[in-house]
Each structure stands twice: as C-alpha cells, then as structure tokens.
Length: 370
Image (cartoon, rainbow, N blue to C red; front, side, top):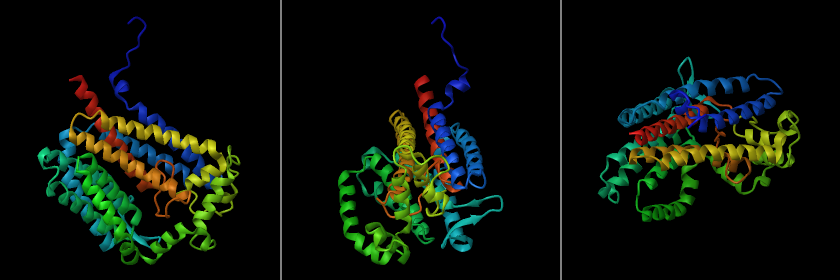
C-alpha cells in the first residue's frame, strides 16, 4: 500500500505490548519509592530502576529460547532449585525471623522465588509429555501433586507461607488448564475446608496464627498485630479521589505505615495519588495480565499454552494477594506488589514470568509465519 511504513524485523518483533506498560508501572513505582524514602532516589528508587533494567535484558534474552530447549531444561531447573532450597536450610541467611536467603557474594538469592515459575515450567513439560488419554488417571494427579508438595514443604520450613501458597497456586492452575477432571478440584476444595482447623492448629507458627486472627478482627489489637492493616486502611482511605499530593502522605512520611516501600507500597501510593492513582495501577496490571492470557490463548501446542497460562496466573497471584492484603481482605503474608515494590527477588520472579510469556509469544508468531 502506498505510504505504508515497514518496521525493521527486530523492531516489529519487539514485545512493545508488554514492555511499554511495564515501563509505565515501574516508573510510577519508582516515583512512589522516591516519596517513601523522604524525597530521595536512594536507597529504593534507584535500585528499583536498575533491577528492572537488568531483568528486562534477562527477560528479552529468555524470549529467544527455542521450544525444545525450554522443555528440556524443565527437570534440571527444578532439581537445581530443590538443591538450593535444601542449601537454604543448611546455610541460609536469617532475616526478619525467617531463613530464606543464600548469600552468594554478588547477590542475595531467595531460591523459593525461582521455584514459582520453575514449577509452572516443569508441570507444563510433564503434561505435554503425558498422553491425552491419561489425563484422568492417577499419573496425571498424584505425580504433579508430589512435585508441588516437595518444594512447598521446604519453603514452609523457612517458614514462608506466602511463597508456598504461590507455588501451589501456579501448579494447581497448570493442572486445571491441563484438563484434570473438575471432580478432583471440588473434592480437594471440600477436603481443604475440613482441613483448615487442623492446618491452623498444627501447621501454622504462632505468629502466622496471630495474622489470621488479626485479619478477622484488626481492631482487637490496634497497637500490636493489627497495626499494619489499620494503618494501611487509613492511608488508602485518606487519599480520597486525587490523593494528598506527591510526597505529602502523612502515614508514610511520618512512619505510621509499616514497610511503605515493600509490602505496603500500594497504600503509600494510594495516600498520595488517591483513587486516580489506584485505578491507573489496576488498569496497567489489567493490560499486562490480558496480554498474558492472549499469549496463552494463541499458543500452538499444549506445552506453550500451559506454560503461558501458569506464568500469567503466577503474576496474578502476586497482584491479587498484595492488593487484598493491604486493604484488609486477606491476612498479611509478605507478598510484594509486582514491578512497584522494592525487592530484587520479586522483580526477578515476575520478570522471569514476563520473559517466559515473551518466549511463548515469539513461538506463536513464528508458528503463524510457517
């Protein structure tokens, strides 16, 4: 057509649909972190932007991996992360009452974070290799449940309930997308309901039990265990429609709001930017998650579809749990907000998920061309 412009292939194939929303969200997050640090780029905003830049390069590199290579590394990657989780128990670094990190010198690695996309990759490869006629058999249920339960148990020993639930969520979503009969999910849900009292009594640490009680009634201990949720709700509610203004949030600036740069960064943002800022964040997350669902829908084979669906679900879990947590709709479990909270492990995990989705999108595009 006359007047049409053809972009060079590298530019045409660049994943602009997700990179542009990510840049907008990360930049907005850096502004919030700048405010949380009292008007300084250090120590939060600058490292936040650097980490995003580094892991964006990692994600773009992952996007060029061929399908055969991705499925081949699923088992070695899973075993390697399991070994790292065992190493955490043997020589891990303590922080905040938990033993979750390995000190590698050049970085502090939290192996449990890598297991979130790792379990999705493994189960996607497993179901891809399983004949369709065996989807309703024990091999399609018992083996994946065992593969999920093993890292969950190691993570619960740290203890880290939030991360263990994220691993379970990603794995169960892959099982659902693989076509496991719904009766198993219904049965599992019923069993979980009856198991809740036992899990609360014998499976949770005392501080985790207190978090559940605080979630049910934050006002019962407003100066103690309920302080986080109450201050977060005050910050979000006081922002109103347009917020108090950039750098003018009293809850975060006066240190009333705990962890304003990590778990409660959304409350920090909502106080200063109000409902308008909150809607902006939700819209951007909606664009990113919709892109992930489109990638999964357009996948040309079972492995690609399960991988994209599971990775999208992992990002969704982060977003949904964090937003529910800061609004008092879920117990505080230490789940940061993707691309906005300050934290290298969170940025790494979510950018690995984005890189995996970019990879599947590139496979989809090349399948259409051929």
